[in-house]
Length: 150
Image 1 (cartoon, rainbow, N blue to C red):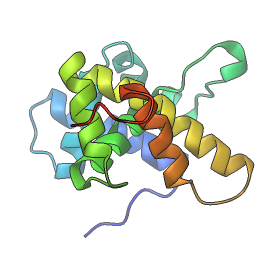
Image 2 (cartoon, rainbow, N blue to C red):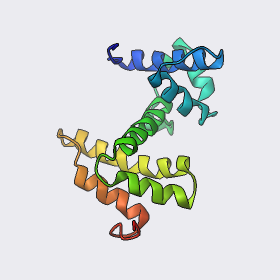
Image 3 (cartoon, rainbow, N blue to C red):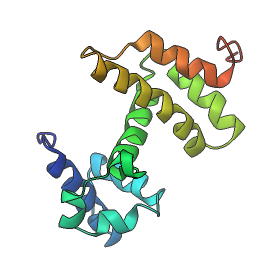
């Protein structure tokens, strides 16, 4: 098994490499398929990923109203992996409920906001993410107490 990319630059290059391989129809690893799938769903970010070293070195300043495409797509992948293993417990049912109302992609977008807030809090307070707070945020998307989850 290969090591996971360690730096921001390596992660961004992995996105570019996966997208380039997918674009030319090359065989992809499971991780590359996940990455390429998310890029395919975000045509607005494809030019960034395709810009090579410029994207690797780019700064995406929220103060300037810029969305970091790599962060956004990475959060999609994180949500998908959480849903796949239902961790934290209950996230799979929340996803299914949200996806039934709109689309899987829109459900992920709603969930990304909850994950981003949870990660931001943990970073600000220099602690591990609070799964209970994360689930409360997610449950608020489907009903005040998550009661709409069957």
